[in-house]
Length: 471
Ligand SMILES: *Cc1c(COP(=O)(O)O)cnc(C)c1O
Image 1 (cartoon, rainbow, N blue to C red):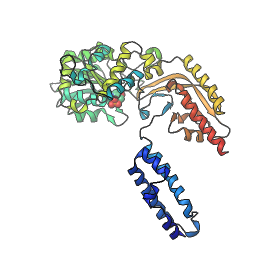
Image 2 (cartoon, rainbow, N blue to C red):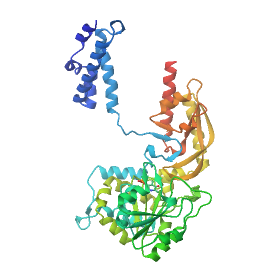
Image 3 (cartoon, protein in one colour):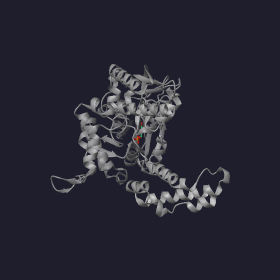
Image 4 (cartoon, protein in one colour):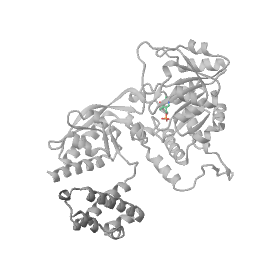
């Protein structure tokens, strides 16, 4: 039997002529189809050879459709991009695992416009001569951060490395022990410091550092005072930390620059929406810090980038550092960042920048939207939906103590367990698995883009339809 089967395995050339193979060749290329067919034939051959005679539930006439079926499945895998879109219904606004900030429409349009063609990335359209890439967002950042000059790097980790290397290579940098932090993805201040060539001079204790501790550490080797925003944790209780003006004043008096790594760096004050201890960029500059850095894709809600803003002499030195060439960003980042910054400049960030929109949405709005969604979802899917008060978090290592009130939609089914719904949603609609405890799925619309509700409903509708078919 197995010999007959082995002999009746069609040749690769014959398999390539099947309508399925021809159609798939149009989608993934003939060479790829040929490789997949070889793979499948080899597997079948060893399966047939290894299987005990009586267990082989296969006859020669079944072989072509079996192979075609496997080819179809594998071609589908090949066609699926590795990086795929998902809907974030988790209630974590800046979700690092889901790509942090979703971009504003203006930013994606700008990327499309610039990426698809040539641009004046390094060309001065007025003089017709070579221009500077780093001029593109500089004036907008300077305006919004109330500073003289700015530079853009690949991310804030790069920005911190670059500033430390530029200002303090071979010299000492004073940092409070309470600020020697680790950000997710193993970015640790002491390690970055070492890589920058600067020498870490720790002062104070974990919970209390006074300005006198900084002052006592200043010597002829001191190049910089660093202040780090402890983004993802808070020390509470018996604590003390010098204010920004204290640090700025001591640095100025000692003739050394001060640098603040702001982490998220808000361009607008989000305190009215309940986000109280995220520093506003312009505030640090106004209070006298020489240079600050922050992320483009945290609270700012733009593309992955690091923004360095500060006094012109410092930014000029940063720009001239050869490391800048290794840490610079490409045209798509400039396009998206500039478009995002323009929304702040126009004062429409709370409506147009998704991160700020998610944070600033009023609870009544969220509730109304959740109610509409729950009703529609119940009607279309036949599942039981409900509304419940909940909490949205900022995420991305920002504002750890902040909980924004939200109204979540709960989803239950008499036929399907929460685990089943969950496993079928996974890979597209990402929700808060921690809140799935009572055999139901929880969806927070604060993090869902307007208009994406229908995609969630379609997905859930097809899950319950599939289940009905099976039953
Ligand atoms: C997030 C963060 C960084 C790293 O920023 P990336 O843009 O992720 O590279 C550095 N410092 C602080 C304080 C942060 O919060």
